[in-house]
Length: 171
Image (cartoon, rainbow, N blue to C red; front, side, top):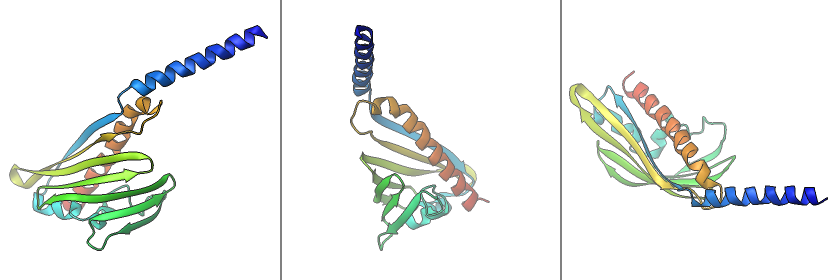
């Protein structure tokens, strides 16, 4: 009996140590992806200017079987959605014609994420598109362990979207 109590105590201690370490790990993230598109900013910008346009290239669209509902504001600068994991909202905070679109997003219990899609003209009618996001994961003992996987997963979603934009504007 004493053996099982000691084993239980050891398991509990290991869980507590893992939780404490996880609470101390950084929960912030800052990542970006870049794609060069063979089209000038004037052709790329209309794809990112308003949120309804994102349906053509974003994984967060009604084509995604996880998305149950998606609604836009009348001006197309904010949206709300529901999917299998919860509810979210996204709103454009700044637009610079043919240069950038900045937005903020909340989803589930995650704190606000701030992002910018920046267009940089390159020679010969090409554009460098840089999509950057910054924020923090929720508090708790295990989100610190999740942080590197979150950035990696989001980067793959962003890269997918940018490659679809490239196919739309420069087929």
